[in-house]
Amino acid sequence: MKVGILGGTFDPIHNGHLYLAEEALHILALDKVVFMPSGNPPHKKGKSITDGSLRYEMVNAAIRDNEKFFVSSYEIDKNGFSYTYETLEYMKMSLNKDDEMYFITGADCLDQIYKWKNIDRIFNVCKFVVFYRPGFSVESLMEKKKKVEEQFKTEIIFLHLLELNISSTYIREKVRQGYNLSYIIPPSVNYIIKELNLYI
Ligand code: ATP
Ligand code: MG
Image (cartoon, rainbow, N blue to C red; front, side, top):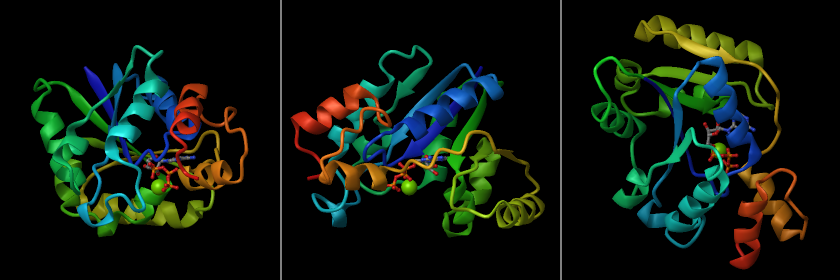
């Protein structure tokens, strides 16, 4: 079995995230993709990040119709900051020996990768997949990719397909401005945002 893991704040989940997951399923021939919303850092509680249970609910609503998409509450249940290496080691334990894990990210993650803790342990348990994201120089991403690959004796899968310039930050701004976002987030997520008056 080949399992993709897509971690994020998902505040809120948007079509960019869903596109990444669907594209990864096909290109990497995955059996499923698990969305992993992050927990709320204790010091930020109630301030800059929407409560984990609501972010989880929005992810759940967004993926409901796709039988290959799943959501895990592992990081949210821990209720605090989680290191990616820890989460991936935990996920790896639930798989069989021959199963493969793919950690799916956007270009900003590769750009910032040296800030992550124990990246060597991430490369030990999964294949690292990076999707291009608008706003990043392909050249500098390629340089970083090469450097990381040489340093950690690993191979990063870089995918440059559709460039979707959508971010949760953009969504939150536009909700505040009263836009209808149903064309760039799933309508079910838009419904929850409206019902609960999120991001205003
Ligand atoms: P925010 O603006 O709040 O940071 P975001 O859109 O970056 O939100 P995250 O939850 O931070 O969303 O991202 C989760 C993962 O999805 C990250 O690996 C990020 O790089 C990736 N990602 C998000 N949007 C895109 C996109 N449009 N193209 C490629 N990767 C993306
Ligand atoms: Mg982000």
